[in-house]
Image (cartoon, rainbow, N blue to C red; front, side, top):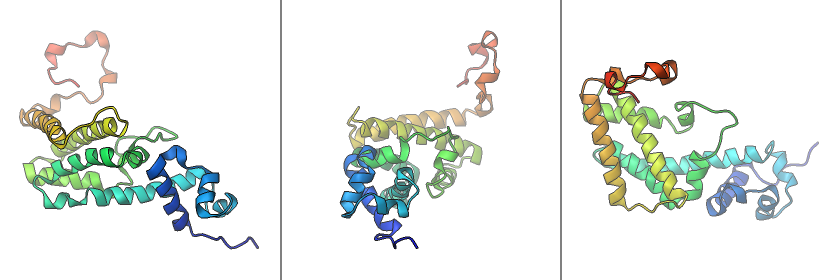
Length: 215
């Protein structure tokens, strides 16, 4: 009979989470994790298959913290803007956890929708908020959400990586400009002119003047 583990999975995951929060993903090694727990690395692998499994358990805790971090959006109007602001803020104040959540490569590329799977339905929440606050259809709200989410992650990444140091005013202005531009485009009534599969178009057939809203 194998020895009884000295720690629970939750306890090991919590220590791994703390290590990543302090020093980044690279700080999480089996030896150092064991040392933090006051043991060797061996007991860790009675609970986890490998260190990737440990990192995933720590990431689940990071998701919980992130969702709590942005949860005050319910107190703001417009709520959707608050979510975007807090995503960037997370990159500023918790850069290592931001990297763990949004800047880790998948073994195989995943779609945009799949990349949001573990965020507790945040995509559906945002789409619903946009529909309610701005009177958009589901298709229009989804376009707004996807573009604004991508921009927020871009700004957050620049902050988390130390490329830029945006003030709250700058974040709001940049997001406001993008939101206004998207809203003008959506309200133009030409949403159906967006080419969603540019790879199907022969380069020689491309005529920009005939397709003013190609992306």
